[in-house]
Length: 417
Image (cartoon, helix red, strand yellow):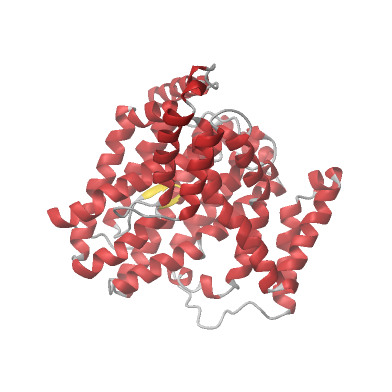
């Protein structure tokens, strides 16, 4: 209750701006991947609407829950690699069988959260290796920023210029967040150049359906392990690493448990696995969101917008076509500047530099082995390199991770309450 009472005082223009940009990330490119997967699987309009409701409304609720419970900028979304994998699976397997695989994957993720295994593994992984993976994931956003400006110097260049000018004077930047200035300039240019396309947008409120699962071992064999690894070792791992780099003590076990719970709930709506959104959490946790103690309000903004987006799912399918994709890439790249800077510094500023480089390079390579994406293999490769090339770094005093024990105590109090 105290957190709710303090919330209005904690919210700021910076947290609202970063929450909005994080939301824009989630409702553009990732949604297109889901729509493409649904097309591959020849799902009906009702099934697609229910899927969209599940992957936005449920993670939005979990984002609000974690933000208020732990006062941390934790953003939930859905597994993007999982959506890609599901599209090809739906070609050969029934929708009900795929839903059964969703439920099994969600239960396994939940059990991993209860067991505490994930938290123990995260303690062992060197932080520079984890941040090397995160840097590899975030680097394309920086590259896309430059490409977006070259693609449309007027529409995408002027907001970047506004961001740089507002950032030049720290006193001005504190009163008026540079990212907000970029958003305002973008909106003005979109209107003046008639670049917003609302034609064909269908208005309506979602009517989600509840679907019953079917159990097929072949479908489970194809989906369950990749979905579990994608959530635990890729998406959630990114979010955990980002939060730790910003001096938070992320509730690892709770994050894992709720990813499992959300995935099971999603399944009954015909939607796939929920997870912590790495890049979106990076946006929420950035310095532009305000003082460290109040950045959770950016997550609240994201959560509310995600719920609304899920509720109005029929409109959602039209959103990605309304605004130029390069403009979203530009805004995301601008918002990611300080986050990427911090992650690169955390990767190469101290020990495990070579291992972090391996993690970084493997991640940006984009390789996929047995349907498991490059960030996971970046963690594996970087960790292996640390044992082979920099084993002496393990002998140095370990980086402080005492926050995990503090957070476990907080989790225990929350559970008892």
